[in-house]
Image 1 (cartoon, rainbow, N blue to C red):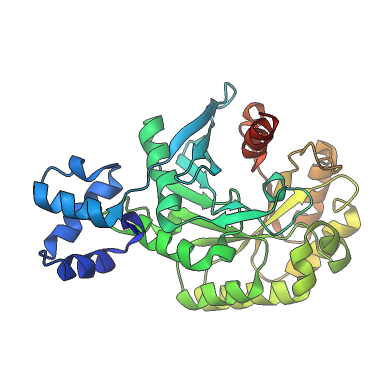
Image 2: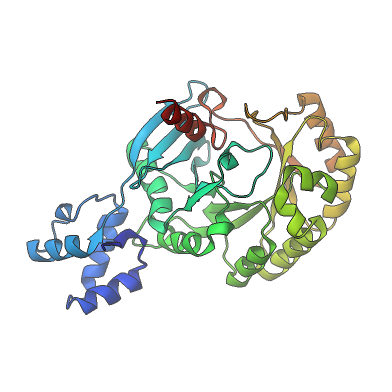
Length: 346
């Protein structure tokens, strides 16, 4: 069977080419072509016809197709639904900020984490994305939109740390100077709290930004909305976060979806502040995106402001995430879910 050439690190590609009897510099030529968006070996015009034919016999090149593209008339946010090689779909969102363009990518087709407020987990996990498929979301979003991407967030469909090895390979690829060359400090990775993988990530000492989707300061509430919490609990998760900070020196950002009547009380704010005291952490309050299949509702603006005020009065830095693309189903998983429902109806 053919191999996915775009998922190979440069040293792996160089080694395989050497086994084919090719010079090592060919690996860089091919790598550059792939990371410029080449979709066939015939486009690699500085390679001989014979080598291109041999490559085509051994490898395939991933290239997603635009299934749907929606652009917000409010803020210019662009949401893509990409059709992958096997027919599955994932979402990518391009957000425009004054400091540059940020692309939010998916790490899996579906998700097995089961968070009650998230459309991505409806239907469960289908499969994990390959490194090339993560890279393609960044690369082809940039090519299709014509907008340079300067920042990446792994906060789309799926749990990045549940696809640990492929995500780490992707980070090496997208960070490579012969590729897109996007620095680690311009990359954020969001996790629902897989403690063992947070520990493993800490050992790598990458300079990316780790965001932890906390969403509740106590086990009783977090167990109800995030089943992953039952495996470790809030205390163990926060201990792993402190250890991560001590190992890497990188401050952690905590994501907190504001859910009406569930986790938005004054008492919850005070408990959250006490548990994060002295960590130098930042809390990002997120107005909940309503999912049709879920009974959960977003907190009112007044309640969000009150929650923020309590945190800040206790010395915790807290911001309210700006809502982008609300007119184009920009919250995670909604566009894919609608496409799936349409296919089932057909």
